[in-house]
Length: 221
Image (cartoon, rainbow, N blue to C red; front, side, top):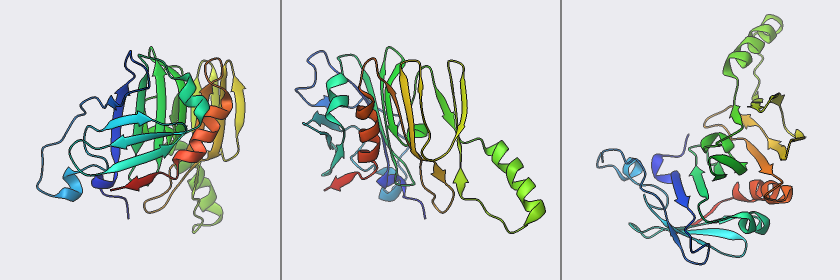
């Protein structure tokens, strides 16, 4: 069973000119019309939380309910953040967490469930459903009961086209791409855990270790 909307979140922060010392306010997000059901109307840390930067984590505090969320991140990613950057944080219905940091529309770092957050330029990441269905049809000719949980990712950008599975890694221009695990089918299924890091701005360990950490998000209320 998927996590209900009240256990998910989707926040965008713009790093202020003052830098990372003070909590940042999330930008207002598109809020659906209330339905009178807290499972649908609420979000994990409210609708417009504040975020503070600690030595190795983002700490979110709701402004419209009594809830907090701590996301562990690598200090090298934190050190790469600059005023004006856009930070996107998403908690999915599968329990995954996605993070992306964009600078002038271009990706600095993406980590975790990266299909759930904006990637900017130059990459697009998807699960190639049409190809998976075609492959399943081929397998079904041999064994009609065969079921494959593995869902490879299709990564495109700046001339790169790759179908990737668990453990894939490569260097592409200034970017380092590493796949901890791809998405898995199921109810509700499992999100991918991937990092894409512009190593000209952030050391690749900043993206890799952040991807590993944010999958185990910790919620306090």
